Image 1 (cartoon, rainbow, N blue to C red):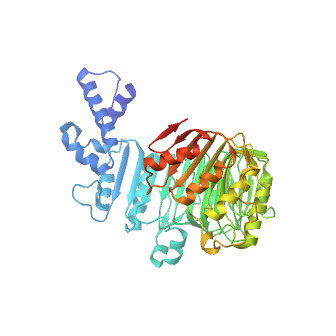
Image 2 (cartoon, one colour; image 1 turned 90 degrees about the horizontal axis):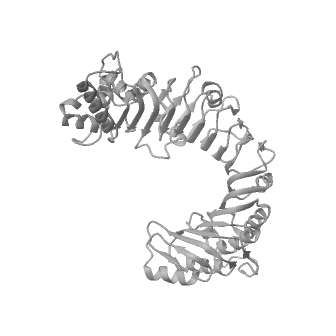
Image 3 (cartoon, one colour; image 1 turned 30 degrees about the vertical axis):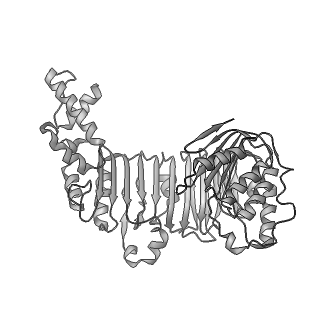
Amino acid sequence: MHFLFLFCFFSRGHVATSLLGTRALAEEATYICWGAAILACLPTTAAAARTSVLSSRWRGLWKCVPALSFHVEPKAPPGAFSSTANAVDAALDAYSDSAALNRLALDVDPSTPVPRIAHWLRFASLRHAGELRLSLSGAGGGAGARGISTGHNIRRRLIKLPIYQRATGIELARINFQLRLPSAGVFTSLRALRINGGKLHGDVGHLVSTQCPRLRELEMSNVGVVVAAGQISISSTSLQRLVFRQISGISKKARIVVASPSLYYLALENCGDRSAAATIVAPMLAELIWNHSYDPSRHSIKDADRQIYRLAVTCRSNTALFQRFDAVDEMSLHLSMLPGVQGYKKFVEGMEELTRTKVLEVKGLSTKQHLGPAMLHLLKKFTGLTKLKIDLLPVNTWQSLCGHDCKCLEPGSWRTDSVTLDSLEELEISSFTGAEDDTEFLKLLFGCKIKLRRMAIHTRKDVSLSQEVQKHLWGLARPHCIILEFETMQFHR
């Protein structure tokens, strides 16, 4: 309570000489504290400023709240929770010099001039001591590196990232401008840095390795980079979580080098068109998401244990990666295959070297005439499964490339009598539609030697199963499981 008293007392510009005071002064300070807490919970600073007029004792109180949030539009509708760029400038100028700003969120229209955005970022670098989030709400998720490379106007949108000595978290979401990283200075307190979209100029490796001594999380998505030295080299003793997703600008000759003794989570997805070479030194690695074709001559994961907690990978051209680990607690497979007989044979050969696991998640291959045989082939390999998750979402175009009369499947591909799952306790089916193909797939699974404690069926958002259909599915599942769960109903045996 004394800390709240001091915060509110100083926020009004007074000098406190003692924690003791009159009862009236203490009540006033408490009232202001509660008012500031209430205003800080409102969706935007504009809403907080309008709410301040409800009480004469609250007027101007929004200038002292520790969190500022702006939704910036070219023309803010009357009464909306949004502001114009001019209103944001005025609010920042009026913000109390004695207030401690620990959260600043800017949801900005993408047409906002770059100098305006740069000014707001400089304000945050001087006053901010917590989390900073800048989002260009209308930029769209694809306005990343590709948008930067083709739009002449966007190429000219260059902003220099200031040094934030006291910020603990920085998130730049859906940005559609070029961002120049600082070459000098230290982000003393920065724990998390997330950048989505845009094009980066500067050495990312130098930024993380030298200028962010306490960085624990780095996430870059849909970003274009300029790799001047031929590689992105990160050496950090503090980094624990690293995500590189959809990174362009990395040539086939470039390399990603990461050495971090504390790194436990690594996601490498579609970097350099899935061809970027990588060397990872991570003795504490526990979770690995790898959406690349693993080539031992270009990729290496050093010092990590032979058994890790979770592995998510595309099941194609990754035999060497499967051989890197002896066992995985949880495995997520994105099934992918090329069309034709040879494509299916390579797909089956790739599954021969799968790492042992207890929990298996399968998604991606939803062409029904191949999903069934592929799943049966998988289940023959994973006889010790305790939990199985299958996503039926149609995200593969193989159906249009291989007709129903294809010659891919070998005789006996649909036989279930040789599949025994004595250890399986839970089964989850996602993106279920109730269509005949989905029901037939369930019948195929029930044809295996299987006994379940729990089965959950999750439908797609645009599908609602009637009670009659749910009862029919329970009739199919009842001999094989004890509990069948839907979003709206649960059956027990």
